[in-house]
Length: 310
Image 1 (spheres, rainbow, N blue to C red):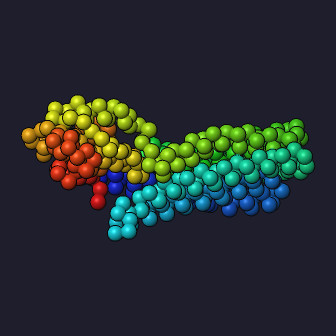
Image 2: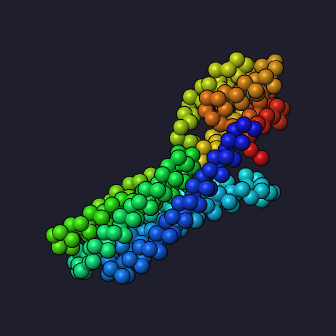
Image 3: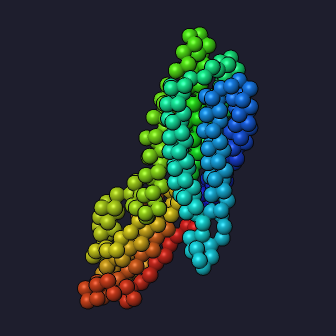
């Protein structure tokens, strides 16, 4: 119950951070669009388009948290917790689209540069930098706890670099007249964002494919289970991620222990304390049944289902 209580507080904290970041980002997006039109700055308008994806991503992240709280039913026995991972994957695809747009615009501006009012461009970019730093600070804590918040953090981080790049381009244009500085900075931002976006997409796809969590060594887990007194062997061992940092384990354990309830408790504690797996389903099979019936021996054994979330 303690883990469940802390997880509830963790989710509530992430929701508040996302809501505050969404408010800041949406407000500045409107300012940046207005500035881009008034000062004829394609760089600002391009950054505003990037900011729009931030607003969309943050809104999706918030929706994912709220949808994830819906009650479990007979159609969705795990509820909607996985919606967070779908949102993270969508955020990554959105970032890929934005990076492609930035690179396309950069090529266009190299070919046909347009005059820019660098003073107004600089002022708005400085405000944008402050807003993005504030949003990053809000999201920094939650990014280690949630793929969803990590995706939102990456969005804001890339936009912060965008603001810094716009500031640099505005200064260069103001003092040298080199209009190519604007697309050059845009290319640098796009190339910086892409590898991090790929990392996020790969992580969310791995979860959706029910891959073993990166911080769980399956061979070590198997060895720990088989090393317990009374355990003969383990098979059908599966570990996957339900949602961020919430792992699920199922296993069939062949044993010769005279006190199977004690063995179940020991195995559950090992999973929880050493591997942070709080939702376990362990099927105990008597050694005789395991030898005689193999995979079909399950109905002769003892069931255990320990978990921290309903």
